[in-house]
Image (cartoon, rainbow, N blue to C red; front, side, top):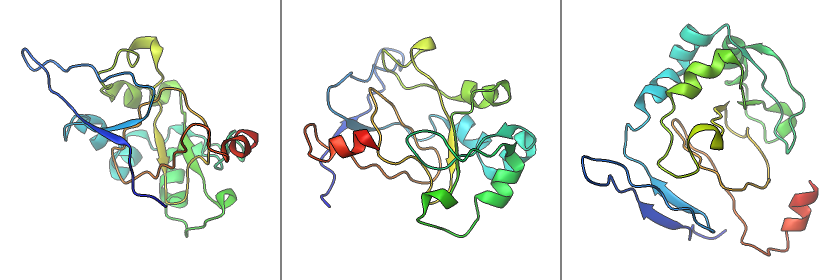
Length: 175
């Protein structure tokens, strides 16, 4: 594997009066580190103990990793956090579940607490805010995105990107 060669941009607080300058729309991916604490309110609400206390009875639908959601289990968030997240690790995606794309009203307070990035297409109805929860070896396999902004508030996320025209792309598109 190669060391990351994706362009890194500095987040500019902007001016005057500390206004945020918009992030650029680009044809190629880039990485930008936002100021620490920018989404501190949401990060606090996503602490496991706080989620159990405030949203433990909310319905969640963890599913298997895949390009389409399958193996969906409906359960209270408390059950997922207490029983599923700490399961023994498995590299078999069928044995892991992650929560992603919960759009019900019960999840609105978390989505509404998210401070969107400063970009032209990130506001209002132009972009969906989704919250993902999952343990190690959970998440989505190879898939395609148009423009997307991914912000990690706790833990880490592994990204693998291919350049345009890579010979593996047709195999991914078929998956």
